[in-house]
Length: 313
Image (cartoon, rainbow, N blue to C red; front, side, top):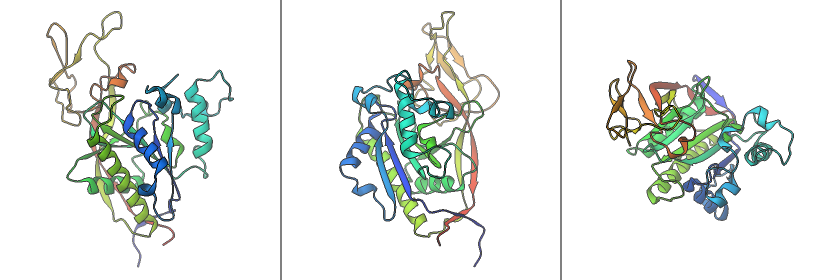
């Protein structure tokens, strides 16, 4: 029997990162729980390692200590000479790269799941960094199908200038998991339950794949980043308008040219410019005020994956 599929190596080593941002508590609490009792994340023949990525930030319940850990995994930072003068997160990135990498090498972990919360109303979100990766598209399809009727969105951050060097990019297959809305420094049972289910389905997929199950060709809808939009600002660089009530909590919903986007204190509405429909994500995310990002515009695409099967079978 022949079929057109990609024979992939079986998955051997998986890590689950919590606390990349120390005030995003769902991942922190799940990883701490799994470090104490990891029965629910173990699968036969698979090494699954739960790991707290930024322990100092977790202890202080803050996003980071010196700089954003989820932005410093470029080869320049990873290659810097280790010294006390380096920002804490750059030193930590080098340690993580040593433990789970090295990045871009055969020795790196197969998959890293990096658990995040957002204050935006994004529900269950999977973050994809490579639109041509059949294995990840198949996995995301499996997770989305397993979670249904609960919606699960895919955010594609493939972009020449907007893609950043994530903590999870140390692995051969990086997977971002983002669930919201949840305030920083707060736990919500519903959000925790959703993230836990996403990890369960992901590990089930890997287990099925390793056992020789063939996954037929599939397609998923994704939202690809187009650009990030800053808040309107005055001549001093201070925010001069805030997210319009019509846009608040409307992540993933279509936003049409002319729709209200921002509102000033004196009641002036600032509409969406341009001539195309966009889909906003990370709307009014608390952590992105410092990054000068009010929301990101995305466009909808369909990605197709060939069938895949483990090369052992």
